[in-house]
Length: 216
Length: 257
Image 1: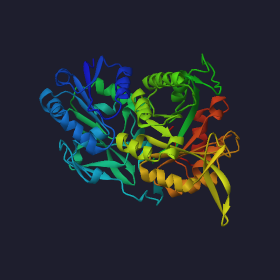
Image 2: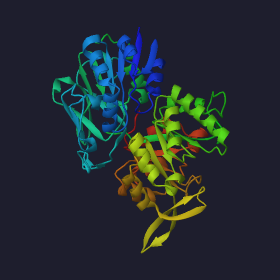
Image 3: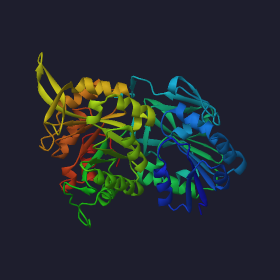
Image 4: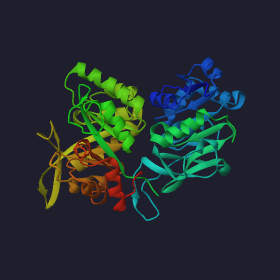
């Protein structure tokens, strides 16, 4: 039973695809909201994000979504899934938009992929990192259940996460550098890719999330 | 393993109906874009592009509804293009569930639209579509220009310079269609594909002219494209998406299998 899944909406981009995907995998009830009361009642929380980090951070703070997120993580202690810019916003700081302070929930940086970027054989790599790349699982986790190591997920980003505490690394992705593809800590699982756009593998991860009890 | 090259089936839609016929065994209604998008999703397409060729305003409301329905059922990226003229049009399509919006003629009339929309919604969802046609050589080098109105109207704009300008303004991807090849089944125009992929840092989707699976391979290997888009070879059941991927993989191209 998933219970009530709250997708935190701070006004950046369309969150219907996240909500549709959660419905599709059998979530009981999904709300897309920044209403504090609803989020407080939620049995699990999704923290998504698209767009530029500065705009995202401004809206997260203006709507006090940072407090709602912290409460979900540490007081409600419900399972939390962060996606893409949602993950980036949780880091200490980002190089995007000339340098932006983020929520510092996970110590670490969000770095630019660099331009020019090339792979180990010297082939030029395009930025943004856009498309289906292999996710290398670094540890066991309930959210990887039924998903083979090196399964491809859909990515679209120009900045990548590097967590300070390498024991949090749940998966990495190679794209000129080794970028953090997923971080896990207690009841938090945070991914750089878009499970809601990653076909069967992404749906499986969301199915795992709505059945997860928040422990590793 | 590295980033996979993408295969993108394209649907031409008029008033909520797919207008170039689509033949799938077991499909109930060959004109229903939702059903067709779901079928390509099941086949393992990496993305879907939805090209709206509807002329009327009423028809465009239908398009929004169709995009909403596809987004509810298909969990791979969806690009919507055709008739996008303003920030408001882009917002409407993104809110309906499109992941990316493709801008073509409006970018030529108003390049600032690309900058403004990339700043507002993020580069990742702004695709600039370029319809290029070869216009003869300059100092022995081939030159391609941007054409509008389905390839009939020249603009005098150099296609390679235009692609660079669009990337500088914040486009996240280029959808390059060769108007010399579109509909010919003779393969991509590899010269312009290579020239543009080398000129810009953002991904390039090659389009126009695919007639067989070797053409897809050529677009990636010779043209340097990051993704290949095709319509008729998939619609008429000549080839399936898995066949295309198997063929590309056999030629050493990384694909999502």
